[in-house]
Figure 1: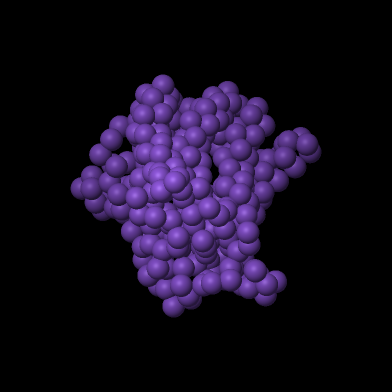
Figure 2: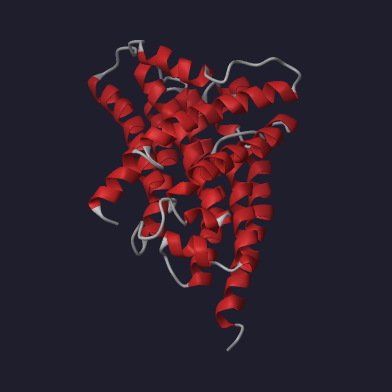
Length: 305
């Protein structure tokens, strides 16, 4: 990828200028849909953005210099890595990305949950520590089928290039792999029934209990960008035609927004699972789909020999 194209992807599409408003819109749509499913009016679509603006105007509570520096740096790292992951999505047409960009994408997607875990332990709050422990355990469990599905698609097309994976993966591998990733999304986004790390009835806001002001605003931004990145990854892998050029941007945005509908319906229709129940579910169904994708990838690569 050329430097100019890289900068365009990072700052414009599918980077910050697209992802920030899209992320807040998706969060607002999630709240509105959940309210409607529960027969409530719900907040306006712009409420997540207004909440962040209000938080940005508030001064954080004074802390020791070391704690303040760490708690301030972690959300910045989370926002930066998610922005980098967004820039790697092969939406801008041919010639984007580089050989092996799948490895970098997966690594960047794993950094924000790690920062959230560190923030929980750095908060010096029992609620934050419990939430961080739950986030770490659930992150490990959900990462296994998530990575297995992505590796299955890479193995099927014999490449670690995202654009090649999105366009050349056989449908026999693509379907179970995308389904496995979709089943992992509620856990990775901390939505019901996998919201064990931020269960407000038990541990308040979990790892973010002691976050306030600008720091909490950055965490809200990181969550919005994470939602856009994961939804965009699903759309890119499920609809390979959208990697053909910039004219598919509108369809890509609409499809990404549509991903929030089944996730919200699931969150509204289910209660929160216990940590052991969530782990068993993730080890069972998403792992089964990822294993099926890996098996089909092996058949596609070696079945004819």
